Length: 212
Image (cartoon, rainbow, N blue to C red):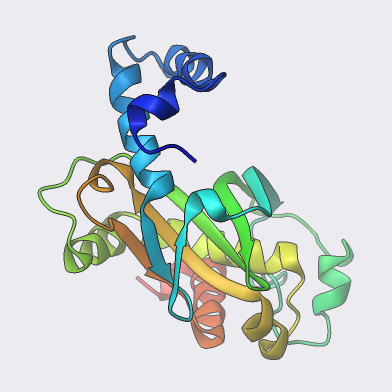
């Protein structure tokens, strides 16, 4: 725990880590101080999500960073997860797949557990006009809706949530954290798709031409 981004940046390992990230993505050295400012505020500001939780991200302990996922694209013969069917466990145990349309793959920035539920988080560095809840909801809806759907399905598949009951018990939701807004506001969009939503997401992936 530190009381300012300046104090945090003086901790051992912080500047070298930010420097490696800056070099990896081609940022200027001058951006490191600004990055530490946004990161510190993001980790220290309490955010609301789930069942009236108000938590600092720095307080979460069970975490997986950049969790990769890789699974076959669905088609009408091979549904994405067969959510809620008797064949779910066979598919998730690696049986019954015949790949026709390639694979979906990617990584989720952060997955963490809080109060026995699993949440996934995506960092955003967008510079927006404002960071109100309404504006962030519009931003996610316009630019990240497909990403949200894939991330939700990938996490449910990873957790092996075979039915609605297990889904309700373990799946917490999705957070989009807009880091440039965190020094000034709780710039977070939180969403928890329902089981019905997941079935719809699955259908849209299986039959994309029917949902356009």
